[in-house]
Image 1 (tube, rainbow, N blue to C red):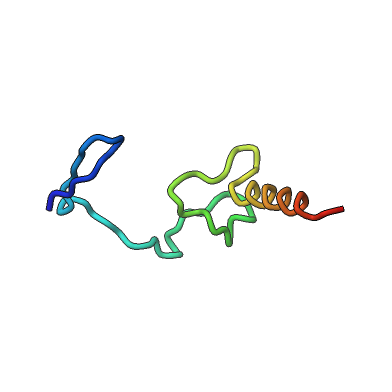
Image 2 (image 1 turned 90 degrees about the vertical axis):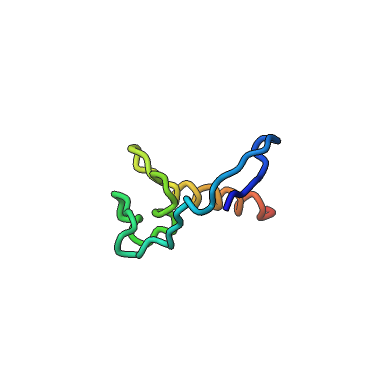
Length: 76
């Protein structure tokens, strides 16, 4: 079936019979990062590399951001 939609305000379409969808990746096959904290990380199967060579990862970055936001909200 041909599905029509707008992309960047221009008409576009795709054939929905050709698209293949898959379900979630089983836990045993999910990618794991190289750090100890990667064991129970909620981010490893989002489709991008979530860690850098410096030792930081998306999880630790999010924890730092949330910690900064929480300290700013508390009145002194």
